[in-house]
Length: 405
Image (cartoon, rainbow, N blue to C red; front, side, top):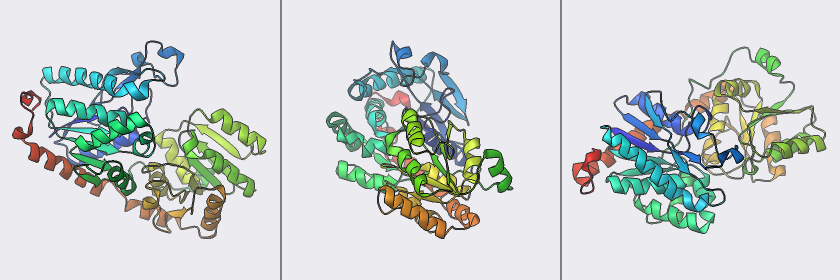
């Protein structure tokens, strides 16, 4: 089977963790089914004066346009992303970039059987147009804000609903997202929930935990918060918890625009000695922090399927989290941790106190996480792809488009 994956969320040499959850699913698919030939088109936003906006526009010239990782071919063509207008123009500029790249590959003899799009807007919107032109079946995976937040805007909502009506199978990474897909577009042809799993080869309990805590500066009861420093991750709520926990420390892993604001909050609350900003952390570094921490706190106001919860639990670290998106589907057992009753700071503090009073054994936490592996999800994904390809077959290709086979 020849799979064409489309996603602007995918790691590159400048952004090694960007969209790593998409890469992980493909990597697991390739490991389980080596006969799958996977090609990824992961376009990079470009603007003629991109040096003026270095945070918004990674330098395309410094990103490897073609690479291979884990047996998967990856291409990073540029697409025009206009400041202030991207929400409206990106689907069309993204489509033009995808079409140009895929036609170049077809001329080189590359063949495709199915389009696999990740993130509904603008990625899946553009991918639907591409799949229609190529005469190929298409799946589209919703991952969170593409269904939770973007449909609040009139124009993206219209295009999202139209795309969801055209895809052959809409995939939610949690049941909550799959339900929202149906609410947004009741005419969706087929939907399915294929949850992300946890990679226990990357995240697992480490021996000599006390030595690790000493090396990393963990003392007393230590909280860990992992995620981009943006409002919806609720880092400010997690920081505020320390005013009620006099002996606790907080380690925050992540980068983002709210760093100065969060640092000011820490200073104002007199917590400079107890809150530590770690900045960007690699998977290997996060592995160590998950093992060292006593608890991971995820105070998000919106989530799809939060991979950090599974990563932490796989290392034996229990979690306290808000009931956002698919999080209740993850924190579904006392061994996982405690879910707050709502999104308030008081509810979060109550959940944390409850966890402290009933801390699960770290071995039980990691054992629970191991039940949420990738195995079942990858089998279901492959079955979904197989069924669509068989249903379309040669006869399912649009007239005049058979060259893509």
